[in-house]
Image (cartoon, rainbow, N blue to C red; front, side, top):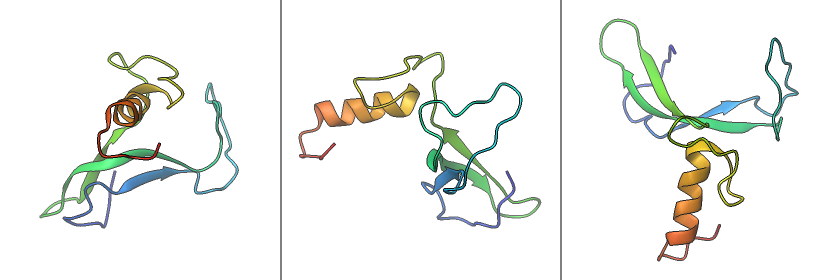
Length: 95
């Protein structure tokens, strides 16, 4: 997507809904939550010459992480990551 952000914005959250009520079309639905949510994290971009764009790794279910829930920590790749960190951490992360 186009962006005015420059180098150093990696890791920044991509938010959906911004706290506003969601409207749906087609086959889209709220799923388990319909409020504001982080749906990805900026992971790459081009900021020199030409169009300035950024991309993100999105949080969601896919072929590698198909479960709808990983031990109560959520669905897909982010649920699996949080479950792993919270159940294998030796640094005392509160989950």
